[in-house]
Image (cartoon, rainbow, N blue to C red):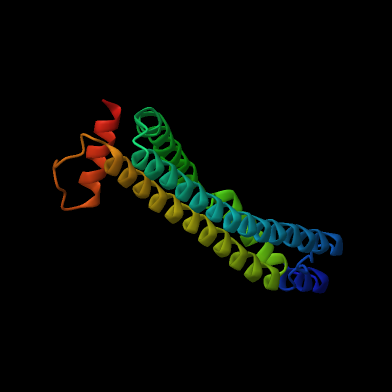
Length: 184
């Protein structure tokens, strides 16, 4: 078998790598800007939310202390037996939701790889935005954990049966005990 010159050139010459169409790059840039704007908005809303939950806790503490000072047994009982357990349950549920947000799903990471291949500068910036998103979610989670333990402490402070009780060497044992107590 003999190769003609044009066959030989075809064998040693690779076809050119196709470039993405210009409109695809523009779509990636627009999508990134939208995503980045949403992360910034999410961060702003998270700051407001943290201030609101702090204010909520402060108000509830004040109501509890006023009820104790006024010896208003009915209000104290409602706050202690209905309001505080309900809030603790809401926080526990919210912790599960926020914990799920901490994981960036595989689809998002695949899209970031594609973006990085098309427009490397935007890919790097997108990774920073995802990192910022995860930081905000972690801040929310930490705020909820602090709130959770704060409200558990309030429950203990205003629970007439909270004299003595077991002590714990680690948080896991304490959490398991509190959840078991709440379930019963």
